[in-house]
Image 1 (cartoon, rainbow, N blue to C red):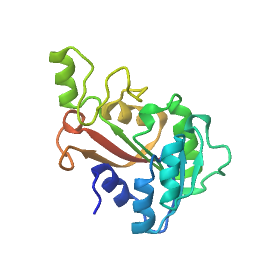
Image 2: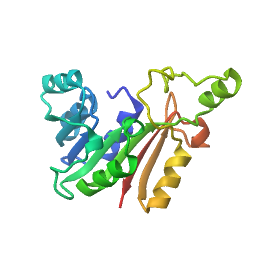
Image 3: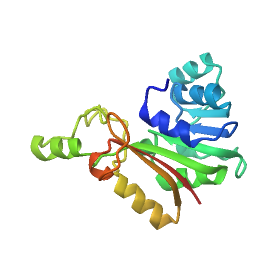
Image 4: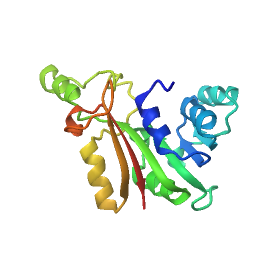
Length: 194
């Protein structure tokens, strides 16, 4: 059973036997689910030594690299899916990372916390401080997030860049959100292509 809703949405989006590259794969939890449940050919990219060790213990193939530096060793369209789950908001060069992901992958899956969620809005408006919530658990001075984006921001970005949104899942604390996702979803998972 898949515990995290974002992992469930990504799992459902990926075809069995696909070639998958996970950028910022962390401890490999998602890649491990995909390898075992979908028989994917998986490759991870991660910067944390501790996370890489966790991946290796799971038997996953992972390279030590910073995704901001690009993917120069991967040929064009060498993967069916490139995943950027909970890592896009942490990169410095969003345009170049997404462009490179679309170069090496036929489809790119991007999952991120929705900073425009109603709880974050209320905490900022009435608390007067940077919000801390279940989907945004860090204080302002210790957050790994360099970028703060909303579902609406990402949709506008894709429109401006000419990227096709093939699928979008909006996730709340207990399931998918269908009404006013920019307000009520705590996370979003998009599948995009060129």
